[in-house]
Each structure stands twice: as C-alpha cells, then as structure tokens.
Length: 276
Image 1 (tube, rainbow, N blue to C red):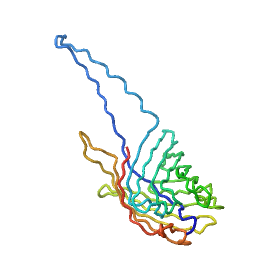
Image 2: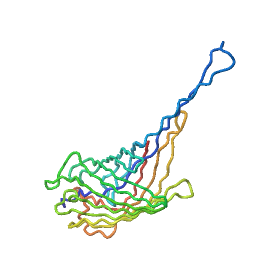
Image 3: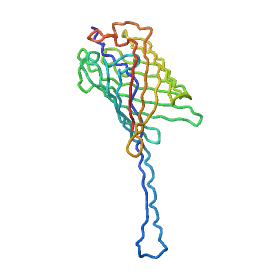
Image 4: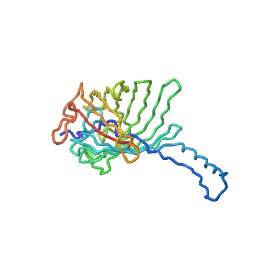
C-alpha cells in the first residue's frame, strides 16, 4: 500500500445555519388607587449590537467528501464554530470523523483557520485564508506527522467563485511535496422552484512530486428548512444531496486505502445540518 493513502482531499463544509433571536419588552403598571393619569415608563435604550457574530454548526453526512475523495468510509459527523468580525476578519474551527484506513490510523480531523473576506460595492468579493489541518491522535506516515498548513485566495462575482489553494508544508507528511496546489471553480444559484439551492464545482489537484494529480467535479441541490417548536419554529436547518466524481487520475493506486478501498470513486452524498 502506498504510504500516502491517507492523503487528505477534503471538502467542503459543511454543516447548518441559524441564530436564535432574543426579544425583550418593557411595560408599565399602576396601582388601582392611583390617579387616572398614568406616568409612562421610559423604555431602556437598546444595547448596540456587538461588532461580531459567533455561530455553531453540526451535521451528519453519508460521506465526508473532499476534492473528489471520500475521507470517511461511510457516515461522518461534522461540526464547527465560527467567529466573524464586521471588519471582515474571521476565525474558526471545524472537525470531522475520518477513515483511519486512509489516514494512517487517525480517526478525527480538526481544522483551525482564520482569514479576511470583503465584498466591494460592485459585488466583487475576495477571501484570503490560512487553514491548519490537525490530526489530534498524531498517527504518523513514515515517521512524519500528516498535519498540514494550507493558504488560499478566492475571488467571487455574482454566481461564480474561483479559489486557489496551496499547501505550504509537505503534503500530509509526504516528503519533498511542498506547494501541492488545487484550483476550484464553483457556482451557486438560488432556483425559482421549491426554495432549492443549486451548486456545481470543478477542481484540479496537483500533488507536486507525487502521483496523486487528478480532477474532480460535483453537482448538488440543497434546501433550507425549519422544524416546528414550542412557540416558534426551530430554524437554521439545511439538507441536500451531492454527486461527486473524478477524472484524469494520474495513478489510481495513490487513491487506495489500506483496506484496498478506492477513495476517489463516484459518490452520492446525503446530509442534514444545522447552524445556530
């Protein structure tokens, strides 16, 4: 088995939106024996909203797909926390369960990321991010940690987003593999029927001095929804389905797990997630 069978091509991800809303009210009361004229009680001034938002997400996926590769062998639990400042800076963390047979014995992946995003008045958007892929169990490949650090730059306009990714460290522990990169073009569109959201993407992975070059594509539909609750709906849910496949695979052996699973086979992934 190639020692690189754990390579990480991850997705993304995932998992699940909504923020609870707090209501406040002020009221005045009077004694029964008081004069008819009731003194109005001035409402306390509302506190200004903080210059940041903090959100949480959690989801269940039938597969953890990342850049055409199934990093889980079956269902994956995923979730995260995101802090976003009004200036455009953001920090976050995200986790997923993964297949230990493809990750040299590691069972979890944790991403630690931060960056800056801004949208100009003409609708053009930019996003710069650094992402550290951390495997807490620290199971190694040929004596090297598979933890990796990747930077990315994205530009978006209306429906389209192009993102360039570059791994500044060795590619998940593989020696002499720095600067492996990935190009991705994605389209997102709200459909006029059924409140459905449409997503499609195509990407190409260059593994630098390794035999893992390949292209991938995905197409999917998803929908936001709420559940009935006591008094008001529980919002922030999203569910969807995504079809993923690969093409122009340089060496299929590169994409086999230790249990001989082809991790880059075509997949149909179902998921449900919530953000609050």
